[in-house]
Length: 300
Image (cartoon, rainbow, N blue to C red):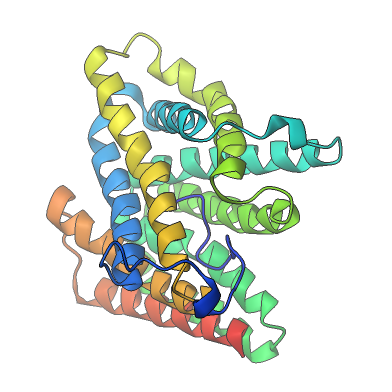
């Protein structure tokens, strides 16, 4: 799964660079931090595959979200006192959407290659970005990405896993929904405080299907592994993204994030030994180009 922070959804104000606190003390260029965030997300996804056979895709989603929620609650006390009655439905919906896309994405990578699942998942934020551009021509980019997905899945060979693709599409829908809901609460709850409220809700939502799968299979080793995965997604990438966004505009950040499907493919190759042929690689290129172009359309 991609992390809960959308590459197309601002998480901090677009301040002039002179007004933003810098990362000079870190001595690390902001684009490296952004790439590290993407690596953390996709590494967490790749490493989750090995545990799916033990506790199930929904089980690992529930455990990973639960561990991430515990870490976030410790790091940032949820601002519960600032919640208004009108905030409750949106916060609940945001948490449920996060839980749904996590379960759906992990269910997808149980059945189809990681890079393919990431590319399909990417259709969600890409479509939202294209629609938000207010330019009719921007709608061509989701179409281009869809063509790329067809090259990735090669349905004409009859080897398509419709269930896996369906789960990836559901994750894309969840990611797109997440973006829209985040916009509604962004002015009220931002940064790690907002995440410390929505991730616990996501964990509870995932528990509905996760607990039945994981029951009887949870060991100290599984708990330790999922604690590490919970830090990889979402705690570490969120922190890195916030640091990167202090010195990058959201448009530059969003354009850079378009390479995330390529990172998913790379880690799928290195960790999971998933070797794509030439046509799927071309499809991946189409998805990356479409993602960058869609973000550019938002800027124009």
